[in-house]
Structures are given as C-alpha cells and as structure tokens.
Length: 532
Image 1: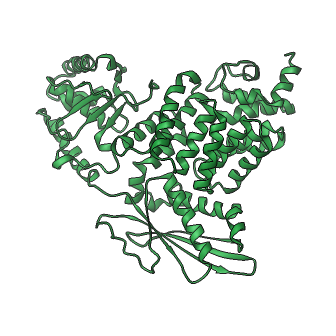
Image 2: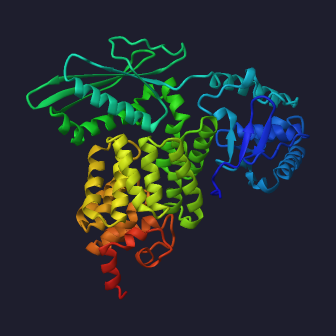
Image 3: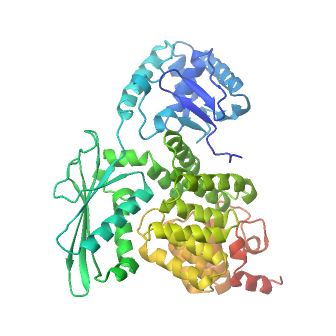
C-alpha cells in the first residue's frame, strides 16, 4: 500500500513529453497540445502551482479573459479524463491550479540528470502562443545549466603523517564515514601535501579535509581544517584536546562530538558564501535536501521530502533513500496521527528493501532500527540493528538515540539512559538535534528522572516548538510536578494543531500515538490519582 503522500506518477519533461502512473499506465493527454503545455507549466513551477491568470496568459494570450478561462477549464477536464483514477492529482481552487505535492517524479530532479542525446525540454511541444514560446525558451535556457552532468562531490582526506598517526586516522576516518552517512559523497584518501583535485574528471568538485595532531603527556591536540577544493577556500577550522590512549580516544564523547560538529558545519550550517557552491547545490538535490525537509517538518515538507527521495532512488537505487522514506512514516504516526496499521506494510517493505541494498550503512541500520521498534513492534530486532549501526559508525548520534528507544521499549531503562545520554554528548547542532533531546526526554521519563526529562523536553521545545512528541511528555511531567501555569500554556500551544488535546486524552485514549508514554510510572500515578 501507499501512503497518500507517496509519488504516484512520473513526468518526462525532456524529449517527448510523457506522464505515466507508477505502474506504467500512460496518462499523457496526447491529443491536446494545450493540456500538455498546461501540465508543463505546472510541473516546472517551484511549488507545482500557478495562478489561473498566469496560465491563461501563457496559453491563450490572444483571447479575452473569459474565453481563456473557459479554455483552461476544458483542458483541466481533459487532463482529469486521461488521469482516470488519479484525476485528483490536478487541483483547482478559486484563483489557482496546482498538482498534488510530492505526487510526481520529474526526470530533471535526479542529482546526476542529463538529457538523453541532448533532448530539449518539452521538445514535442507544438504550442505557438508567443507568450508560451517565450516562457519555454527561458525554461530551456535555465534547464541547460541545471542538466550539466556533475559527479558526486569528493571528500579528500589528507592526514598529516609525522605524529599521532592513530589519532589522525581515527578522527578523519570517522569524519569521512559520518559525512557519507548523511549524504552521497565519494571519499578519497590523499595523504599528500597537495592532492590532485581533478583525478576523476575536469568537472569534479569536492571538499579537502586536513588533519594534524601534536602529542602531549596525557592529551593529543587535534586540528581539523576543511577547504573547498575548487578555490581552496577555508570553510572551517576546529581543534580539540583528545586522550592519548587509543582505547580512551574511541570511547570519549569529545572525539565524536568533534566529528559531528565538523560535519554539521560542512553540510547543515555552511557560511553564507558557501551555500551556493556546486558541492552543496548537488547535495541539496540528493539526500541532504530531503533530510532538511524531514527535520523541518513544516506543512508540505514531508511530502516534498518523500518526493525528492523517490526521485533519487529512481535515478540510482540506494538503501539510504528507502530508509529515510521509512523514517518519514514515523512522523506520519507521531505528528500527523495516521493510524499505525495504515503505515505498517509500507514501513516494513521500505525497511527490508533498504537493508537488502545497504546492509552495512550506519544510517540505514539506525533508521530501520527505529522503524522496527516504533512502527513494527519488534524492539528486539530494532536493538540488534542499532548495535550494527554503532559498530559501523560509533559517531552516529541517531544510532545511539534509536538504540535508547529499543532499550526503553524493552524495559531496559538504565541502558536506555546511558545510550540516550551518549547520543546527547556526541551530537552536533544540526537539524536533528531536537530529536536527540526528545529521545533523552523519553528515556528519562520512563526511568522516572523527572527533572532531567523536563530539561531535555524543554530543550527540544526551544529548538523545535512545533514538534509534538516531547511536548506530550512535558504535558505529563508538568501535571505530575504540579506546574499548572506551564501546563496550561503547553496545552494551549498543542491545541493550535490538535483542538481536542488534553491531559485526559493523553493518558486514557489508547488510540492516541503515545503507547510508551502511557506505560510510564508518571502516567500510572496520574491515572490512579484521577480515579483510574
């Protein structure tokens, strides 16, 4: 089964225009050039939506507005007739016409897209309206720039060899692994003073990570520098004092936090001049852009993220795209209040295929761990997957958070607290930070560490005020502590999205998505105080 937001059709915009359902059915209105042009105008809009006035001006500029309006209405009817059972993919409101968000996979969205044999955008168009012709010429010019094929960026790792060899290799390898977990990037170990940045081809782009370390009596001073290979621009420079002993180095949170804050600085929080670099533009069109949308979780973000992940998987099948798509389903349950039963089949399909494609990828293992724990009611397997994720990359903060989720679901509360706390101690400040705080809040609430749970929940609230999972725990915790003013403000805040939200619903309604919360000692005591 498909959730409502999953892609339902493919759009071929380069070469002969074509719309097909995901099962291969041809949906193209082939006998109407204007219907095809209308779809092209919508598919190339930033949000797949245009005003009726704009569409009439581009397709019927020689007609009176009333005549153009009737023609527009007729072409929308033609499109719906060809779409058949997918007719709802095109929508009309009072002043706009739009396509359903996230429902179409466009050929040009793939990160490495290049038209076959130089095919032009909407090559088969026969529309002669001068306004449409001018618009199409502009779009073709823009598309020519976007479709220039570029390989995935390279991370060149250049470790100083003169001293602290183990520390240099440990830190740089962990950085490379973590960066690769978050986004598609190729890794090359340069180990020379000035690596050849164009070893693949002239259009290659990339990052250059240099590390150096100086031994002290009990600590090693470690320095990391990241430059952009194209112009040698220094992007950031970070230093940290780390333990001399190799065993302590791999266990200490400081090393893993150095790695995560450095990765976050590279891809999640770049300086303003770096945001338009070819490297980040490529990554934004891949997994990284979808991750930003997932953790932003605003309005249509989850639908757009699923769309982008599906586009990338269509172009280059990979477990990471499927794993993040599965993780979105957890948001559908917790934030959109979609029934778990409606998500189970698709979640299991995505998770199993992700593991089949990438069984050694730390992020794939971590994300599917949470899916098995939270959506598939199999925390034992979730715990096993989290262990494999940590073995693949000990610096992965989400792997530790999801391990905590499996542990507190299984009732192993001290171990859950340890894992959640380690996740907090190594996490950077990327867009996922509020999720790490949330898992610590839940582990602390389950362990009856009330004050710690409140601090973590409030930290998540500050970072992401509209993320509801920790706010449900804060509701419970404020009620338990007798914090009536905070409780009233929080319930009012939650009712902006859930008008019937209340403490009673939270602890008594078994259909509400807070099974773990209702099993806490806090909830049980509140229920007892309320008379059961």
